[in-house]
Amino acid sequence: MITLNARKKVAALSCAIAFLNLSLFAIAGEMKNDASTKQNRIEIKDFAFNPQTITVKSGETVTWINRDEEPHTIVSVGKQFKKSTALDTDQEFTITVGAPGTYDYFCSVHPKMTGTIVVAK
Amino acid sequence: MSDYISHDHEHDGIDRRGFLQCMAWAGTGLLWTISGGVLVSKTLAQVARAAEPLPATDLSFLQISDSHIGFSKEANKDVTETFKIALDRINAMPTPPSFLIHTGDISQLSKPEEFDTFDEVLKSCRTKDVFYVPGEHDVLNDGGKLYRDRYLKSVEGKGSGWYSFKKNGVHFIGLVNVLDLQAGGLGQLGDEQLEWLEADVKDLGTSTPIVVFAHIPLWAVYPQWGWGTSDSERALGYLKRFGSVTVLNGHIHQVLQKVEGNVTFHTAMSTAFPQPAPGTAPNPGPLTVPSEKLRSMLGLTSVKYLQGKSSLAVVDSNLS
Image (tube, rainbow over all chains, first blue to last red; front, side, top):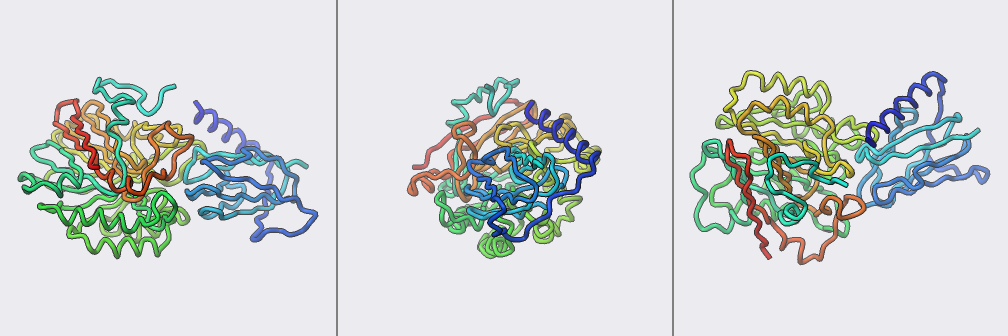
């Protein structure tokens, strides 16, 4: 049931994104130190993204940090932003978010792990 | 809430309690022998201890899995050493297995140096023939290219690496279910591989013993933790007509078995670290046990599978 619902959601989301022709999510190769830019952090722990849904503003950064002993990845559903490499324990991955919208992502190593970024205007 | 076994058509008596009793972890492999269509597994420690050589068989092979070379956390700070110990056990066997099957997660992070270490240590093994299928840890960053180049060239793996071969009348099939996984999903074989599988077994007689090996279990061990393969039913459908099908998997770092019709499912222990039994922890992952326990819990389960019978004989032996 969970799988079906997730798939439906993903499909609907992909369609919506395609329809709106949103291009988004510039990738930041490094952390931004600009004090005016809020850093939003998502902790990966116990095979879950926490918070699972995060609401951010366009132009802000989002950083994941892996606190598990297992490697995890960040992969956008529908390839809306560049995927991370495998993050080992305590490794981080940062993106700068672009256009407003809702973006689902998951861990390609443990695809049961899913999360959502909501980019507000 | 149902968990790892959603049904039990065969009334084989494997319930939660039974499962926990036959669970095993750490540091060894299983020896499989095929004699007259009868598939038997023994733990390595049992084999190494036996004073007498193995009974004459048509074929014997050994499954090792989940070496996780590169892992160095609390659950096992020296996975290379425990992998060596597993190989020592193989080398100590009176009758060496014809070949090994490694059911994935050679490495922790798909790093070339991790594969290098594995290959270097493996040189000490008397048995030289090894057949591989990748685990998700082996294909983290490049879709499995490096892994295929290193481990699947000799078998001419199709697509993302699947292949089959014959040994002594037994048809072996190595499948890949760790690539192109979908959000929210499980392990996946994919249409191309399934079509290949259908064609691969189409002309085989129903009496041909089949051994399928893949990393993630090809049955719903515990979908809540991703321990299953979304399209495995279709694969098993192509194998239904065969009298003897044995499915060997890794991934979950513990022995677990199930018989359904003529199909026997079996998962292997890891040589690196244990994982919790399904549902006994909030999530899967390396399980830290007291260090003296890690190795003392080698090889707990011996399995006999009799062709044409739906019952699975499980003998648990605690070696501590």
